[in-house]
Amino acid sequence: MQKFNVGVIGATGMVGQRFMLLLAEHPWFNVKVLAASARSAGKTYQEAVGNKWAFDCPIPQQYLDMTVLDAEKDMEQIGAQVDFVFCAVSLDKAATKALEERYAKAEIPVVSNNSAHRFTADVPMVIPEINDNHLEVIAAQRKRLGTKRGFIAVKSNCSLQSYVPLLHPLREFGVKEVAVCTYQAISGAGKTFTTMPEILDNVIPYIGGEEEKSEKEPLKIWGEVKGGEIVSATAPAITAQCLRVPVSDGHTAAVFVRFENKPTKEQILSAWENFSGAPQSLQLPSAPAQFIRYFEEDNRPQAKLDRMEGNGMSVSVGRLREDSVYDYKFIGLSHNTLRGAAGGAVLLAELLAAKGYFAN
Ligand code: NAP
Image 1 (cartoon, rainbow, N blue to C red):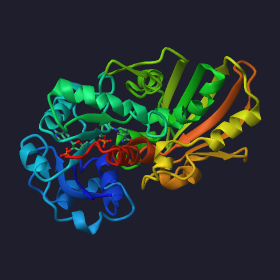
Image 2: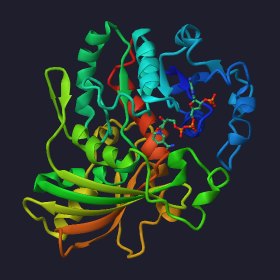
Image 3: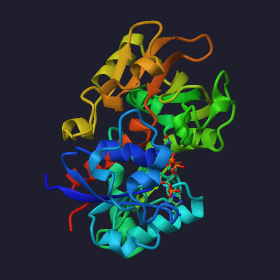
């Protein structure tokens, strides 16, 4: 595989910092440019991040003295140096949409962590193991944008990565209704225990916009490509409640599911164990060998013990049992800033690279 030069827009943020760690020794991607807001522009990466560095390990040496560019003002300079950019910014929806479209129209492909374009019909929202076929709509998107190589591809919200990958292999049994409660880590809000002290000894029963995303995004992921657009699925019915809990990383989901054709427990376990997708068959660098890992122990999966399964890219599951109201219930877990954010975006970029979407 050829090496690609990449930029990270929002490099100073929580997700941006994760990108810096994941890309430090990436076999295909070489970080050429770091960009953020005008507040950080002109500073070295070390100065711009300051005491916001969120990890125990140090900032990788090669980034310390790189000058942070202004994502808006320096777009041309950025575009001249990179094959594509990752984007994770805290801007409002309209401003994020406009920023990402400006890059795409300037022939700089954008792999985005932001939610702004998730429901643009010709923008693929991809969990690489599940709906890699949605990349087909990029041709129609390029036509709309008037570009040859520029496009936007997005990853889905972090919350649903702790249950959608577990429901997906069970769709052959007709997943009809799903009720889910997510218990979400504070890094999902870009916070640490230092910057979110109010979460200690506490549970906060509201995360703005999260329940709607958790109910709606899975239907686009399970949608069909028709006439250059993705048409969302109409089933299953999903109801979600999302809580913020005092956990640094790792979103847990308590899931209840009803089927058209109720499978046996063994059928479910076998469907999970044997499921794999394009990242595994293409042997992408960030693909976990085992996408879904089932734990037999009653007290697993646990965020603290199991979030790093498959380098934070596997989805863990346990406590599968019959339910008295639904057919089955189980507990899922995924790492929200790895599989759920930067890691998922890096895996998506690897998929795009392997399928030739960054070619000139
Ligand atoms: P964050 O820690 O607040 O970081 C925000 C980043 O955006 C910073 O680098 C900031 O730069 C940059 N920024 C702000 N205004 C900008 C502008 N006008 N132009 C360019 N860059 C600008 O936020 P985060 O948690 O990393 O989240 C970033 C995005 O990823 C959000 O859309 C979020 O919804 C999404 N996301 C987050 C998670 C997660 O687990 N945290 C998961 C999935 C998706 P400065 O430092 O210069 O201000």
